[in-house]
Image: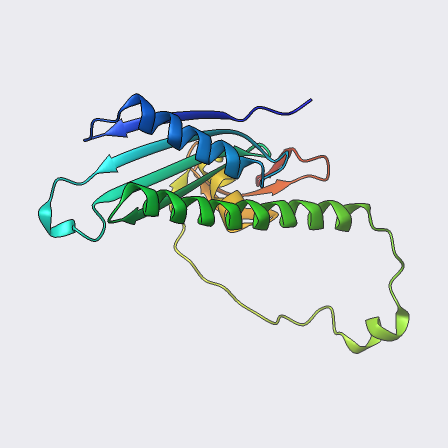
Length: 184
C-alpha cells in the first residue's frame, strides 16, 4: 500500500490558479517519496513580494513539514516560483536526510552495548575539560527549550525556566520522551 503525503498549499500576496496549485502539490508529493516514511505532512506557502527592488527574490516558498515527530521549516526565494520551489525542495531533502541520520545514529548508540577497548580508554583523560561555552540565558518555557534542543540537535539543553525562574536541564530520554532536571 502506497503512503499518501498530505500537502497543503497556501498563497500569500498572489493569486494562484487551481492548475498551479495542483502542480505544486504534485511536485512536493513527488519529492516526498525521497523522504521515505519520515514525512507525514507538508505545508507550502507561496509569497510574491510586491516590492520591485526585490526582483531576484520576488517569489518566496516556505515549506513546513512534520518529520518523525519534529517540525522542519525551510524558506527559499528566487525570481520564479519554479526555481524557488526547486531550491526549497532541495534544502528540505538535505535537512530531512540529516535529521534521519541523526535519529538513526542516536538509536544505534542507545542500542549499542559494545565493550570499550581498555587500551583506548587509557589514552583519554575523561576528567579533562576540553571546551568551555558561555552564553546569555533568557527565560523560556519548557516547550521553547525543547524546540531549541531539537533545532541544535543536542540530547540536552540548559536553560532558565520561565515558570520557576530557576536554571534547568531538559534532556531526551532513551525512550524518546523528555526529562527535566530542576534544583530543589
